[in-house]
Image (cartoon, rainbow, N blue to C red):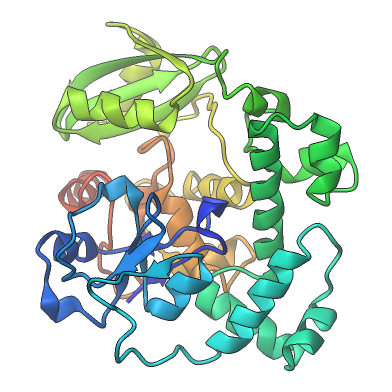
Length: 363
């Protein structure tokens, strides 16, 4: 079962990744046979449940999946009192070391922490801690601390704290570190983030394609969203959820050249695309996405192959998450990444669309 998870749930890009739509379908069906295989967590309530929980089904975009109760709790969720998913669940091997390390990092996130000091606090070797932490959480202790710092930095900016104060309180030490690590995402400065992207104007259009309706959205700087779907209303709603504070308008015929290139590529009539992008992302996501753009049309790579190619062989789960959070499908061809055994895995726009895309590219 290929899953990935975050440090704190709010750390965004380290959220659990689902590589099979059957997880969500099991939740919708309240499938008791899936109990014990995984738990699902709802970010709005901070609660995790069994797939068979009788509670009202949440929105899909609010749900993260975890391999067990321990990992959900490390990520900051608490057990549902109705379905009691912890009952009878064996602890994940090494979870206590990871739990203790995560608590220490959380309480010292604004301070320098060496792996040796963290391992000594936990009572294990640096090598064992690094390996166990990455195996269970999908990220290293250093990346976990970076996520916590970024989370605090963003929260302080939203709360109105002066920029300099937010920088030092989060433990960055200097403004240059902030711009190196992009805690508010690439394409958005801390000042813009503090304003909630209210000055960002996004225009979008929706056209027909052989894979359904195609939404193309952009700013004056470049593309910020490309989506596939069946209904215009759902596509627009998804776009507004991604950019809740931006001024968004639909304009028929917008971005004619970009749309023409994307549709031509989709239909197998165009070369690889090189379009300007204006999307927020972590440095790791950019590294994954740039590699995906180098995969030739008609070829695929396993998630583990991508991880090795970008110099992070232990980050297979994080690679899967980066694929799942791709804002511009087709332009960044996340459909070309498959499971190691050749299975298609999941695809935000539907596994059938992924299959058809790959078939088109192999023709």
